Image 1 (cartoon, rainbow, N blue to C red):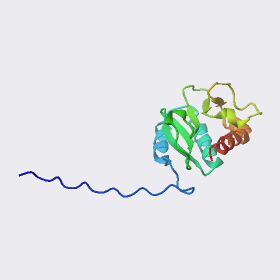
Image 2 (cartoon, helix red, strand yellow):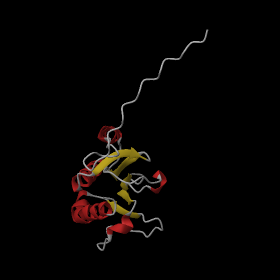
Image 3 (tube, rainbow, N blue to C red):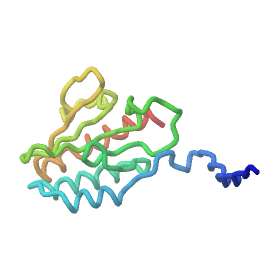
Image 4 (cartoon, rainbow, N blue to C red):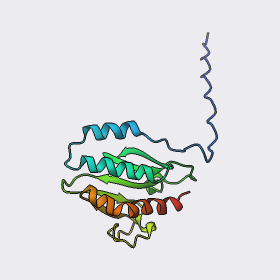
Length: 155
């Protein structure tokens, strides 16, 4: 006699994606844990930069990617190859002890004329370096403008 396998339970249908429902969830708990474990001379500055980035627009989410805080557009987007990093805005780089470096994935779209973003990488990346809270205050408008310019290309 053959036994019938019980039917697998049905999964609930996924909720439809809407403009008010993020398509990629933010992970602030993971970022908080990263900050608690951070042993860096500019840890305080890194926390201030995080606050400035998250305060720039409610559509910015955060996660740990490449072993550092990364910030991304958390709203709805058409499907794309994840290796294109279309959703990503900026990621921290804390390898140096004298500054906090920020990698803007689509910094070429920012149209930065202030000199805040440096480099001219073929893939569109641009870099920024901050060494103090004074430098953050000086460049805060350029930082926010770069994020908002990137978001205009995504939303």
